[in-house]
Image 1: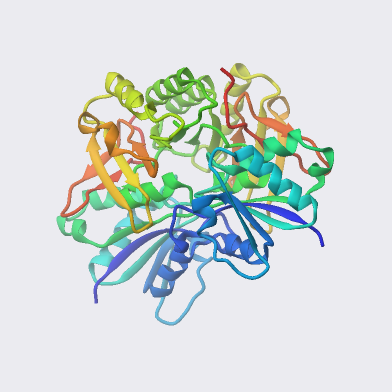
Image 2: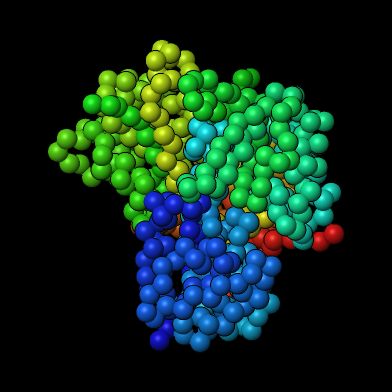
Length: 250
Length: 250
């Protein structure tokens, strides 16, 4: 049997946002590896072993997946969203680079998915419709000074900004600090979108100006989108549309 | 009949990367509107009218779609990739905001998709595995000074960078200017990925250091990914893996 490793993105939550490519890989797998809530999205079946791991064990999980593929198993590492955006793909390549040379000959594929900021933006309208950036507030491997610097430069560049993991266990205070910084450098009317668990039964969307934003509006299942200076609200009955125009006036 | 408008992302090219949500919307539609090559990805069937338009007519196309939805038709506006990333969603909301007030009561949904940079990153490994940004080089509504400023600040922030539309018809010289700028501010070994038509039969991937990159390596179907200073190559037989580690050393 020839083993392989697919690092797959399950999208933000709904099965309607899982690509057929990922569904096909899961149907051929012998082993699925990942953080508990993502593995639980995969239906059990005979011949498939589900390996649920804790969130803190990314590198160990990656090594385990590579070992199984090297033994000839067909392994899918699952992430939510897209595996290449603040998820498992980088951890797998870190493990692969540090591992035995024969791992480099393995059939390793990354299967892209709908990452959280795209699903969040779609629900709100088109807030990422112009140039934008994505910053992970969670990463306990990254000094806070780096995050602060990137936020400042992103505002200076007038990007829309997607903040991933605003209230992660590894850095729960990060989002409060980010809000303080944004208040110091942006106008109070800057538009923020708190998008929680988009496409799941727990979905909640909230659009507020920066002046009214509080740390409690974000939790571990929230992506926060910060508009650029050009981002606009279209009022209507119900939730407004939020979008960023395509052009920048000369 | 109650009309609606769905702004849908068809993904980068392969049907295996179209979400079931988009497939379902297309199966219920009476009208599909979009740029010619994207509309041609939709299979004709009785009861479905395909409206192919030129690429320069985004706002007119958006208005037409909104008018049809207001008349009770079920309209899908198709984009490649994700509709909210340098695609049709912003144009539709611009048209909606400028249009008659009754358009605000329409059922308008954005259906996210796998945007080109995620598909390109997946093919290369995980080059967007840490903080990153996305910049559209095409936009003829945006002065070049804005692009140059954003590139400089992005390099200063040490983002990985995705460049969309590097050699668009509206600004064919943009990518050559961007390369000149990058050479002035980045080390010559900075890693670039030219990802062309990913997931289609015309797919081609090329990984080169900045010193060897030339404008001709990109065309209208290419997304260019520029690594951060931390992006690494894992050599192997065949195409190398490229990834950006999750952490930043303190």
